[in-house]
Image 1 (tube, rainbow, N blue to C red):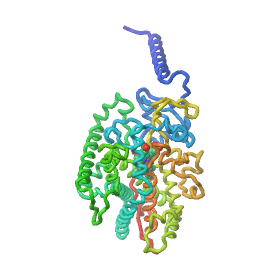
Image 2 (cartoon, rainbow, N blue to C red; image 1 turned 120 degrees about the vertical axis):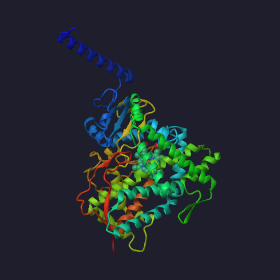
Image 3 (cartoon, protein in one colour; image 1 turned 90 degrees about the vertical axis):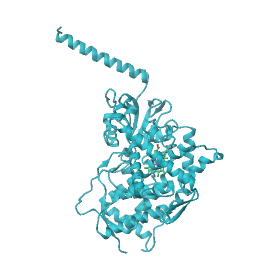
Image 4 (spheres, protein in one colour; image 1 turned 60 degrees about the vertical axis):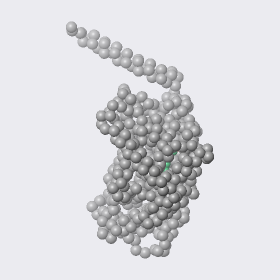
Length: 509
Ligand code: HEM
């Protein structure tokens, strides 16, 4: 049978018309007729805008926001996703409508890795999350508790300084990226369990598990957005990786908990004993055993909360150190200004820096703030989900919409910052802008109800180590490196793509 070309054209046009009509009808059915929606870039069938995220979504979403505005509606598969890229729109989400946007995304990976979301950071908004958050804020991460870990930070800093001294005496460059990762793992591990698990054969396995775990929770899981493509994760081995890590992490935790229950009094760490009750696990086990506090958590909750602390607290804290040293090495004058401040505060070469000294170092604080602005550790923060229909900046947002706040783009928004791409800690010296969640142009820790409870823990860890590094050593790039590669490694927290190598020489007083 033969068709006249004209008939074919008519048929093609009719099909196109029909498809476009059905798409519009479906869209109207979902969003209603009168909804005033934020601007949206065009999308693909099935994938929506997922293909536009690329490997570094914070950068690609910033480019899209330059075209479509600070509040835009994308679709990750069939999931409507609001992208927020200015201080004003972030304030609407995290302050004006904070209660409405205080839910988290339900993710199958988080469910499997975090004991059915029994942790804090991805638990659905509700009474259970409220109880856990109050345990975090009041018991695990209160200022008093954070101070109580000062000896952990001092000892781990001293160990790291010793390693650098050894390398510097042989004129070998040090791999700062690697050292910062190990340092934050050990500090968090000792705060969590009262001892380190990074040494020996078991240590290697534990470090591998931790690395896998952090990598997996940071991955975008296609099956969560396009259920019909979830087979991809079965075929490419992703699902079995998740199951293996979940199983082995659980075995590891069970081992640690049994050890603690059998020998509750004391923990040996090297040749000194750490007191019982000083670490997160002991505190949580006490709450678990004691139902009188009005808070009831089970054994899985204990493990999930500890995992949260590792997921949220290790990589984030080490990337700040990594990027701060990167920028200081690229800007020798800023490095010298910082060294001068620290060396002035602690003048006597036999004195060690104490955490009280940090309060006398405004430039150190400005360097950390500037690093958090320019290299926001979790650039897209942790997604929120709307619990009800709501209007944001005049736009209609439906219940169930996922919200991604591009904290990284907000930190570089020319509407809020002069010369936003420049590393310039001085901008903070006469400014009251802070990262505590009240100034929406700087929100590396998020804000509002779901804001990060680990701010003081992270900041004192970073400030203390950085002050020690720049006081005792002068730093330069290895001779064969002219300028540093500033590439980023994809992940939940953004590390350098290329490890940071530097030469240290001991400062002579
Ligand atoms: C530089 C280091 C850190 C950065 C940049 C950071 C960043 C963040 C961000 C962006 C969020 C989501 C906030 C929101 O939705 O508004 C968050 C949540 C959270 N962070 Fe941190 N964090 C850091 C360190 C820590 C540490 C050291 C801990 C614990 C020891 C921690 C524990 C948590 C927890 C439990 C949540 C979930 C809060 C909730 O959902 O209610 N973080 N963090």
